[in-house]
Image: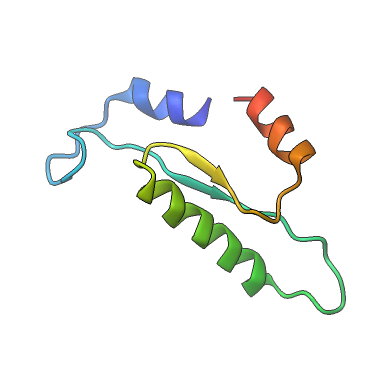
Length: 79
């Protein structure tokens, strides 16, 4: 829904090399908190998923491989 909402706004992006309008690429990650985990791991996973989404054509969301099938399905059902 978020990507669709941005589409509907038709925000001009004259300097874009990909599209004349603002688009949205999202990297999704999750991390089960533990004593050994740190926020940097979560940020790194989300960042990697974001860059993969951009490499696959932008204007999409992509899950980090660490996300479970159930989490992926739940997000997809709400989009």
